[in-house]
Image (cartoon, rainbow, N blue to C red; front, top):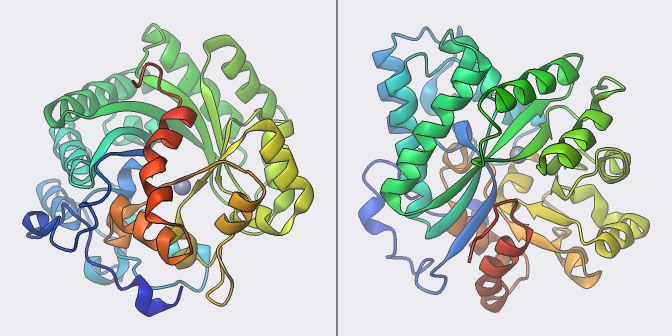
Length: 348
Ligand SMILES: [Zn+2]
């Protein structure tokens, strides 16, 4: 898909376009969607970010321009360039009520894309630091805030807690799991995610901590792996971390052994077509590996990753998947596929 094909309509839910949501017909054929890979702070509409930054009198990093640096709508030179918006996304919400405001905007954007259930990802520890509260309090706020917004829009939601690769991965995971236990193991929390720079090492005990959390609490495990070409990260995600799903996994398309492994074990790949083109995970001149996934019987779900940063929505990601060779029939089946591989129980 070239750049012009990426020039799709702006994300539903952004200021002023909500009423146009169905005009281009993207929602006309697919009435129900499930979203299994979306980062909460990558799904906040620009208009809401502006409101909150103003309300909290946030000082932006030197040289950061919101219109230019908070949007990634054309392919980036590097993953680092793609991640520029997070220089600001990590600075808010410092106020409790602004967490409610941004959560409501995130869920509204999903509802406009016909999303009926969503697994929302967030790293709670940054929220605890911003709101000067304990990790357990931050998790409780996130549960209340997302729960209220989801109920208002008639969407089911579960929470996935994200841990970042690097030296503090194990300490941070332990802190999150302690918070989860302090709150009495709330059913709202359904899974764990590992994200961050795939070149960075992680503490040797981290994989066993993920597996222990899966065994003890029944949490689903999804690992961002194989996004920057490192197939060995996908293998370790499966064999060491006990991954139930793989985020992106684009490198797997060229590895017959791994395609076989994912297919045999029924491990689902969360395919984010627009994100993959913007980050360069799939180069402009190459086909998207989702055709390989389908050919080898690797299950996959189409997801949106950071829809507001892309100025798109899940409907656009499904359209992008069709531009990559999938059919409208494939898209209609996606709802059932998403249900099957969701970490949320009782979705029917
Ligand atoms: Zn992601």
